[in-house]
Length: 320
Image 1: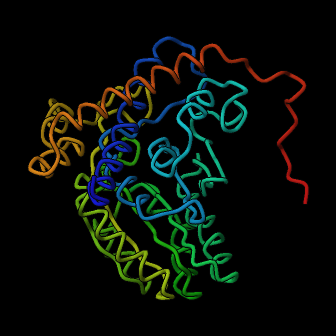
Image 2: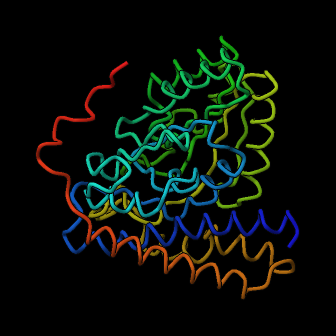
């Protein structure tokens, strides 16, 4: 198998892992066994994977409350993630973080973040470290269209430009900040254009097209690694589920989600683009393998133990 084909199948596997993981959580959440809120990423898979296929464990990302896709794309263990969401001691954060706070520093995953717009200031710190130590690493922040309006995001972008940091600001525009439409909440209606006003290259791409995201991010990361400073990318995609599980989605038009599933599915688009290079059977085999992996992760999470009470106050502070 050629190296290029291996990379394409790896990208598809990651997108399939995200989709299967999320759709299974959508089902499992109805059992009452999962504590806390869940915010699903289905429909935006091409963004996380298009970005993280360029990154290594030495590069850092910062996420949002809708962070499962970023975690999986960055290489976090699916079994550990599922256990974390079920609140079990075998979870990546020992069952104490849950869905909105999954982190794995060994993979360069600084954590999902319940603070809206919380990732950019964390990521510029990681980027400053990379620049100061000369590691060649980059920092990538993921922020939603709602979070793009936060003042600390503006401050982070300005600082990244001033210090010429190797940072990529990825804005995932899925059309809604919770239940508020992008066209109402973003005054300029142009997140990429606003980011460019801080003095960095900024582009807008189709976030349902893996190749469009991958190409734009590849250019930004190359520039960052070579000392060219930060960039911003606005990727337009569409979330299929509510802001959170249980959201009645009264702000969405009748038939909107059904249309998006039919016309704007990143996995369908990817398969169609590669129909002449990769047979359906190869994609289908990956689908089956991932389904089995997620089944195993759920079964294991159910069987694992909750953290003991005596561990309640551990992992609160770091000792230097």
